[in-house]
Image (cartoon, rainbow, N blue to C red):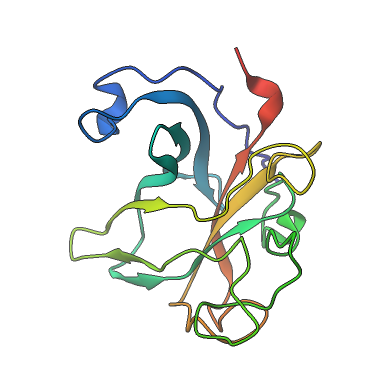
Length: 179
């Protein structure tokens, strides 16, 4: 099975892949992850940008069909097909339960659903609340972290994964790729 390699951490420049920050926002770093399906085919790119107004996740990709898909940050920076179980569980340093609608949640790996219209394009920009990239409890530990897109919408309450189904797209973020 194919293993997926992350893109390098690079300084962002205006016009880079259409993912420019909002006007007047200073970007200090960007960490990117190639997104791929279990068969190894390209599915898009996700970036985590550290900006003057917070830390943001941006995603641009392509689904195989229109729909709403659950999406989560996972604790292990590994995407091995066919099921991406190698990505481990959700990134959850605070040990909360899953979902914004769960009275015991939400944990740090919870993300909003991403929607693909009739054009099958996936696009999202989301401010990551309480995100710590590195250090104690940080997302980018020794093995990095990953992003998973699931086959169904997340219900935002059911632990552990919001009834979002199989893992269909995966990408790896690694801190060791800084230049």
